[in-house]
Length: 255
Ligand SMILES: [Zn+2]
Image (cartoon, rainbow, N blue to C red; front, side):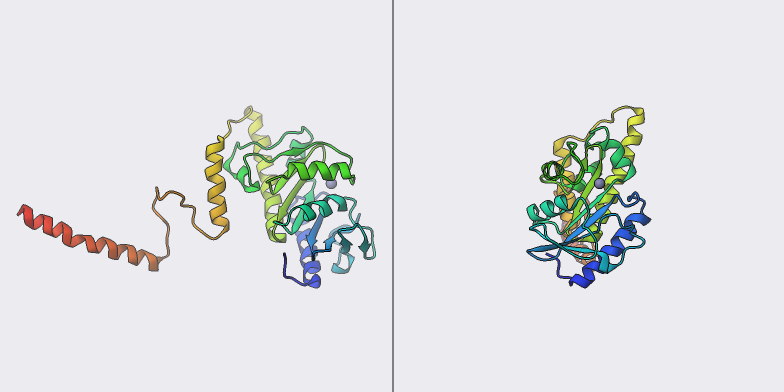
């Protein structure tokens, strides 16, 4: 769970909303954002307030029981923010938007397949599309939770996308990746349905991504040269140097 104070989370939330506008993934007041505050509460953006006018004090504080404090109404999508934060202890931030290309696929109920290895950023071989349900309803929240099973992102049928993260930066990054993948996929479809990477390859991709998220280099089987800091490389040269006497000994034998 996040260790930031409520004041810091409110400031970061406003900054992230402005970045949603700056990166172009937000359409008007359609997007919304939430962050886990503690075991009983979360913060969520208010309903119908443009992000460029929003201040930290405008952010709404909600209980997981549906009660709220603040000077506005919470986002009409507070239900799926609440339900996802409650069901997914592995993440602390829920970001929702109607980004253009993700929504283009979602209006056709088309999930994103593994046409490109980056589909693995959401944690699986596909980024699913949740069935349609009216905005703001429990039915939409239930559909979103289902589509997000073992995933960090999903499309929402005839609606938009949801991206999750450990913090604001991770959720914002993922939302932009989902939008970029969607754009590539829509573009690729111009030439016909593209081929997909098989599940075994996507398994390797997801494992590489997992290793990198823990700060390790993607080197699962030692088949390649390993990129390494220069200090470590000196160690490798010493190992090579130790072999020289063997070669010299062989040379002497031949002589
Ligand atoms: Zn929406």
